[in-house]
Length: 88
Image 1 (cartoon, helix red, strand yellow):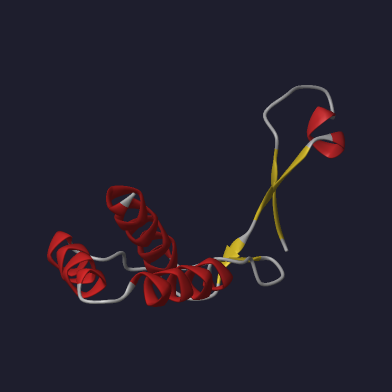
Image 2 (cartoon, rainbow, N blue to C red; image 1 turned 45 degrees about the vertical axis):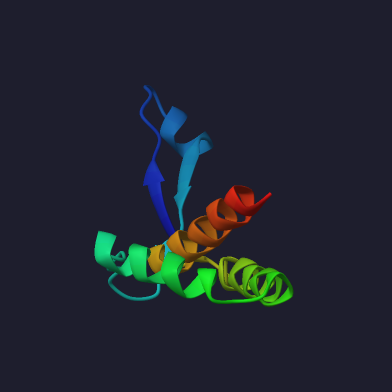
């Protein structure tokens, strides 16, 4: 666990600690080309398959202990969510 003192004075930092979750490994987000490819691949799937992929992406975005989910997992979830909204 990584704790960073919260800005304040006269010992307030002891009472107010800012918890910063750790990343499991260096994070590299998708490029715009990657995101476009995800959208194109989603367009080829049946609605029920897109919903299944969305649920799987949702699970990948869960925090594991103190570790944040990777940026790619979040970007993937958002891309699928946008796609589902466009299809409505």
